[in-house]
Image (cartoon, rainbow, N blue to C red; front, side, top):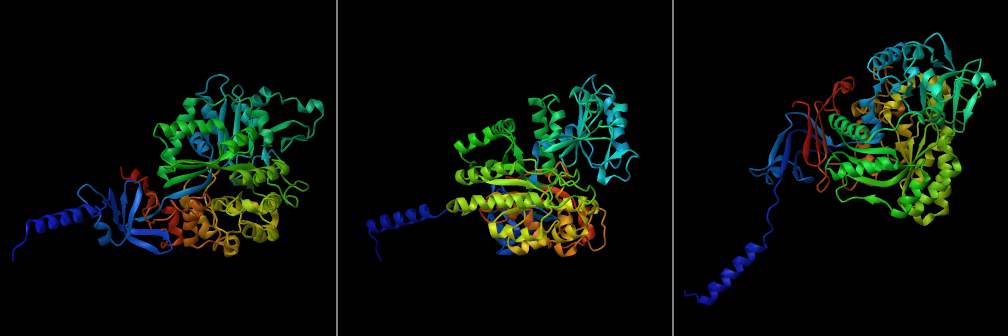
Length: 574
């Protein structure tokens, strides 16, 4: 059979067209296999392997399927039996506080007043004359013993003043809702002569200065009264801010944290984050909440609108309001008085009228509102203001995702309101582990059992829970919060069976609260929170399978590797 030249020409062109139209096969920059990989994806609980292309997930499934994307240039990571999950998300913390806790006096592990005295005395040895000594982390309710002299359950400044007579000292409570000053700090603030004026109780709006029977300040400044001291502490420097930022990044990587909900930042911190991102140092995804203390800042951002960048490294689309105090300092705002301080209800640290105004403005301008509320009254008052805003602007409530940060102590009648109003509770499970042994002294058994740390009740009502640690209130270690979520025990493993065990999360719920539900709390469930094709390649790798090991082995589990944006940023073996 003879073929004409035209036939060969047509055949050649068809072949050429066919080869040009073939879609080039995609190749992976990294392939991960060899361990248990939990996806938190509804289509498949676990997979054998994950292929990554640059900073996105290219494939998640069986190993043979993943190997189709492998080339000689693909990095291969053998988990060697370890466990990988989506990158853990710190759902409520204070990023710069984490960094500065590394720079300043860290009192997180102190177990007595004497421990504080010893730590300050040691710092005095290297401090310059008149230099401020600042720190954070003490918590009197967690001490092994209390000093002989106490006022309203707090230590007095006298021993602190003795070891640091010339250096002003201000030590923040672990919660951040109270502070402890020595006499030099109070002298600088002009507060040492209160007794001469016959003042028995010195209060400021949204806070108080605790005094003894003679009207003398004992050194404890509760809630907004802290500003009487802090306004005299020298400003942080750009150099110290950058150092704290870098230390916070390292701490996140070491603990498997790839994203961070930063609960309340001012303009100066926004500028710092912009600079660090421009310099290529934003190696954690920050979802930032504007501080509600600065009304001008809010107005400025209402005009700008939300900020969601293409690489999802730095997002601003929410507002943080601080509406009451903490339970440890008896600042949480309660419906009924404190059991261990009759007549005291805590503090409304932000006028509820401003909460209502901000809820309405947030809806109008597309900003999520996240309100700190620990006490049952604070939670109720905020839910009321949110409800007013939703009813006032029904067309703006389709996907508002307003949050209440902490939601620790709720009146039973308010628990179903979260689901009814589509309000997300951002709850740090480790607070239960740390606080529950003494919280019963503050609230009494009835309030504890009916409304404290109501995780399962809230989940069953139909709302997700955003988990976290509230670092530096607690260490950023997510293992501790995961353990608290599923055990309802202290980090010492007590009591047997856990506190109020009916409120435990399942392990699947706890993992989701640290990944996909936390992503949902930041409008980011479509880009992260599960190991799903197309999502960002952020992963946390543990040395044990936290989903199956015995409960008492969870706390011994360690983060051994962190992958951020498709790159290994932490490896404990190197």
